[in-house]
Structures are given as structure tokens and as C-alpha cells.
Image 1: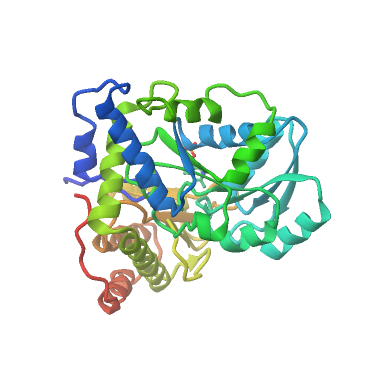
Image 2 (image 1 turned 135 degrees about the horizontal axis):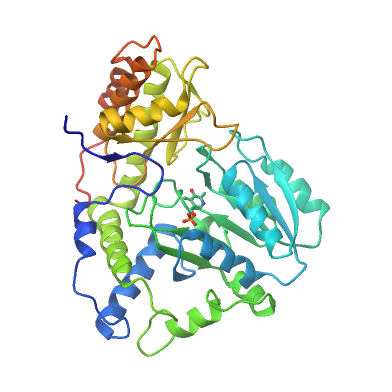
Length: 390
Ligand SMILES: *Cc1c(COP(=O)(O)O)cnc(C)c1O
């Protein structure tokens, strides 16, 4: 039977046809004024999405490249870094900072729980030599969202760095209102662009620190990027992923000018509510049922059902690609992505595929119970149908 391929993981995410089409334009030289205008528009649009007036630098790499770049641009060898962790991505930051020889103090929360910002504040008080504090916004491995406003407040005068990879575009990021010094993210989650572009917003305080930071750097050197931005024809210091930037430009135009950022955030909130209601009604557990915006929902399967069988059946039998969660912690967890170019009926389809796969795996599931719960949330929402990027 024909099955459509529906990508419902929290990154990479489906591309609107207009964003696909933006990739297949004839290539331009990035040093021309015409292309520079596209580049500058991307930077301006990223500022709007991050709600900041800070500088935004764009790099060609997956997001981890820009993460590593942020560390070496802000720190000197031996510097002391606080990393708040509550999942796999927080632990990536710990490993990255240790690989560079920085001293790391971890503030761990159990996986599936938010970071305890009171504990962050206590560690900040206890460690007067901290050079930087790092927190993941939406900890995609568990789907838990951390409170960035509380994080910035807990850090006081310590410079803050946030990984908002799956946050930006799906969850509100108020960079300037909350006083976040450095925010790093990229295109392949809620921003509806293929992987390969990352970006970094940098406060004045972070620039001041950067000038004194002595860790070696070259490809990701912020000075190189700032110099290229200040050139007669503003550009990136090295050849950018030209086609990807055109795609990101198209996607951001759709997000900001066709749908609207506030409307997109409201849509993501609705998708989360629909998914959580459906998971509950299907008889599954939830890692977190906090009513906050999130890029994905983590459903907990009963011990009688094999997680990998369900994930494989959803893809093979119904064309819906979802994903498990990492490690032993995630052995019974299925993550249903709902960020980016996703609408309410995509959630309904995903829940229907989940119910069918659960029934096939032997679970006593009432087919349609989750679908009905999702539909009721949709029907009760006053969410209008809006024009977004197509
Ligand atoms: C998706 C994601 C990343 C992605 O990193 P890549 O280097 O682009 O693979 C990083 N952090 C978080 C929290 C994510 O959700």
C-alpha cells in the first residue's frame, strides 16, 4: 500500500515546498551585493525570532559547531564553567567543555525533570570564579523545557549561554528581556530548514568577555565573522552554505511575515496540548505534562510493549517517523515531534499511527481514543487557521 512519509521527529523537521524550492535556484556568488542582501535579511530575521537587538553571527555547521565556537570565543584555558543538565544535550555541553580542558561544575537534575534554578543560584553563590553558565532551553532528549528567565536571574552577573536548538521558533525566547548573553541555535528544528546552518546572538557583555578570551579558535572565530559583517559587502568570513541560507531566508519570511511569530508559538502550544491529551487518552504515560510550549512530547509505553517495534511499525506500516529516547532512561519512551512545519491534523495522523502500532504490538488500546482527545483539544481551541509558508 502507498504510505506517505511523514517526518514527526523533533529535528530534522519537514520542509514546506517553498523552502524546498528555494534550494534549487541557480547558485549566486556570496560576495555580490545581491546575495549580501539575502544574508543581511536572514540576520535581521533571526534577530526578530530571538527578540534581540544583539549581534547575530551565522555559521555553516550543525549546531554543535556553533556551540563549540561559543565556548572558545568566551573562555580562556582553565576557566570554570557551570553547566545545568537534565538530559543528553546538557551532557553534550559538559563533554564539550571538558574536551577543551575547562573546569566544569555540573548542576544536574534528573532526566525528565526541569533544571532546579534555585540550585543554580546556590552554585553561582558558592563559586565566585565562574566564567560562564550554560543551560539547554528545550532538552529535546526528554522534551523538558527549562525556564530561561529564571536561569538568567539565577546566574546574576555570570555570563549566560543558552542552547535553544529546538526552542527557537517553537518556544518563546526573549533574549533581551531576559538578559541572555549568548543564544545558539540553528535551522533544522522549528525553523523548517535543512541541517547545516547555525547562529549565535552575542550581547555587549559577551563581546567584552570575548576580547579577553584566549582559547585558540579559527573557523568559528567571532572576530573573523564580525569583520566580514562589517565589510563593504557584508558576508560571512568563509564560504557559507549559500543554498541553505536562501532556504532559511524563505522559511523565516514565512514564519515572521506570513504566519507571525506569536501565532507560530500559539500553534506549537496547541500541538503540544493535543499530543499530550492524545497520549493520556491512549493509556500511555507522559514524561512531563507541564502545560508549556515544547518541540516534542515524550510518551511512556507499558513494559509489555516493545518500544523499537512500535517506532518501526509506525514508519513501516503507516509512514510516520517518530523516534525513541536515548539510553536506558529512554528504553520505554517514544518521542513525538511537533515543531516546525506541522499542523493540528499532522498530530492527529501521528496519534492514529501510534494507536494502530500499539494495537499491533499487543496493547489493549481503544482505537480512536487518542485521536478523539486530540480533536477535542483542537475543537475547543479558538486557534484560527492562518496562512503560513507553504
Ligand atoms: C537538535 C539539537 C541539537 C542539534 O545539534 P546538531 O549539532 O545540529 O546535531 C543541539 N541541542 C539540542 C538541545 C537539540 O535539540
